[in-house]
Length: 119
Picture (cartoon, rainbow, N blue to C red):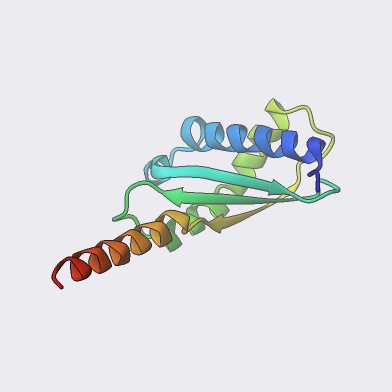
């Protein structure tokens, strides 16, 4: 099934613009370690789920979420002044734990590999 091209384009625009807003517009030093990994927009472009990960693993991800939500107004203001959209969608930040899960799976596979080599 084909995805909606318009929503895909808007999601890409939002991903780049939100990344730029976080890096260049916000003064929170801890947010410099945030990477926007994906954005998913619903069909009527009213909601954008913004997936993020934290590059610096020592940083508390709950603290990062609080900082992102605290700076949501500044991010939306940046989006409205830099994107030509009729309406900026509601933004929901979601932590992307894909990398953590992949790392755990790799570790388990390595342990299995080491275990099968002993026999």
